[in-house]
Image (cartoon, rainbow, N blue to C red):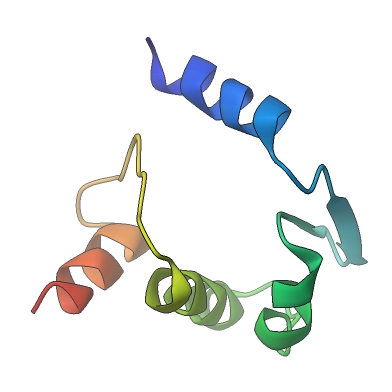
Length: 83
């Protein structure tokens, strides 16, 4: 199964079925109780994106990453977490 299909399947089975528009082009999907913790920095810049990604990686029970761009932000954060 291709990554795009797996992502589409995840969105369809998302138990919260919540997608929220935070403004400034920023949307969130998942458990709304996490948004209050995670979404302190709602800026649309790379610093805010890294903070959000780091928060999710630190709080996740398990990770499913169908595609990570080599050398990208997520690749770097995942490698840092595995140290």
